[in-house]
Length: 177
Picture 1 (cartoon, one colour):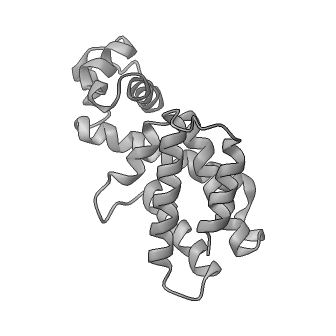
Picture 2 (cartoon, one colour):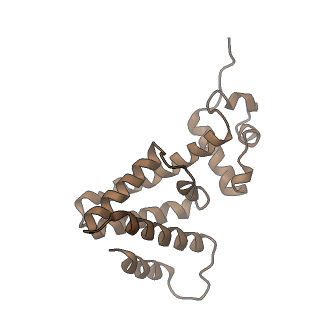
Picture 3 (cartoon, rainbow, N blue to C red):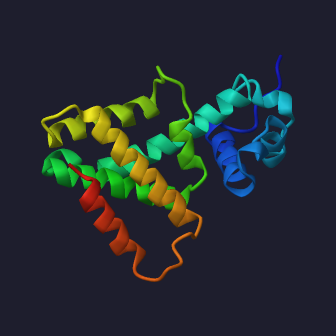
């Protein structure tokens, strides 16, 4: 009879996310996650196939965090442009809590399913409601600006003074369709 697994999938993902935020992506290894959970590495393979699968689970978890933040603002009841602004603010809030994990939203291959695909689909649908044109270029532009702004913010790169929240809102107003 196999030994019982003493760590849940949620605990495994939390430990992996903590390692990612502390040590970067290179610090997320099966051995490091097992050590954080006080289990042996082979026990992790009962929950996830390999490190790539583990990193994908972290990406799904951060996408779920953004989706949860979006659900909290009920974007469907807002004007289309306001809904897009809500998406941006939700992403920024999650990026502040998980600055390294948030980048995993952009590392999954085409054909991704699960929470990341749901997040992308919801963003495209929101952009489509806000514009008469092709939503894909607009979604790409918004995503690139948002990722760049949040990455710079989390790196502490805005040292020129001024209010970063105001700068975010100004940029958002100018990037939205």
